[in-house]
Image 1 (cartoon, rainbow, N blue to C red):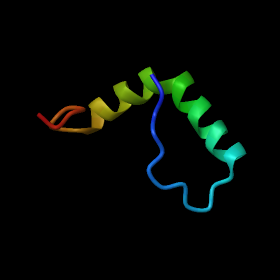
Image 2: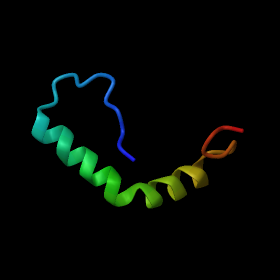
Image 3: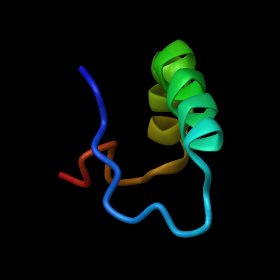
Length: 45
């Protein structure tokens, strides 16, 4: 599943690709960490 960039701002294509690759490689860890810090869960339910 790919993400959609809504506003690239001043980021270059190379920077966007690097960020996208990082997210793809670490999304599970990011989800777990977000869940720990959110008192309403990841989806705020």
